Image (cartoon, rainbow, N blue to C red; front, side, top):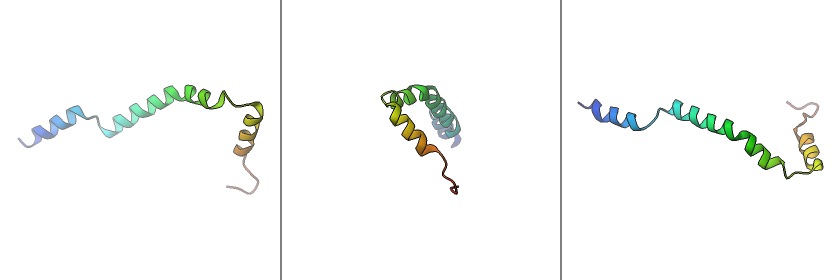
Length: 61
């Protein structure tokens, strides 16, 4: 009967893959709100400078 306590422990704790999927879904649902909170207060100049930082430089990987 050693497996009974193990089964009980698994019943209350989700598997790691399930937990990872739940977290990923929560992040994806909140992403638009997070993006808006981070970028709405920025000026046009800020946006342009950030866009410039994201451009690949010639010779970079």
